[in-house]
Length: 102
Image (tube, rainbow, N blue to C red; front, side, top):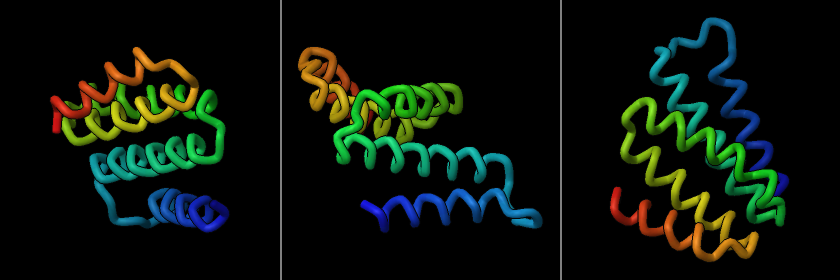
């Protein structure tokens, strides 16, 4: 898990670097990918409850941007988090939403 934390941090820093030649859309997409990875990593570390707010924010960003892929990824990871928390009905709903978007 330590290497995953390092890679997520490196990616986030690259997009925040002054002089980085990226558009706003690229920056939002990078934030979404990094936040998704961080949330999923937290789930895998047994920190699902902490991951849910992060993954909820990724879902809201995907909805706001109209990103089908971002929404599907967020629902999938939220489902995994909710399953880990024993919230089976909510997990099932999120899995179905992810599949419907895929």
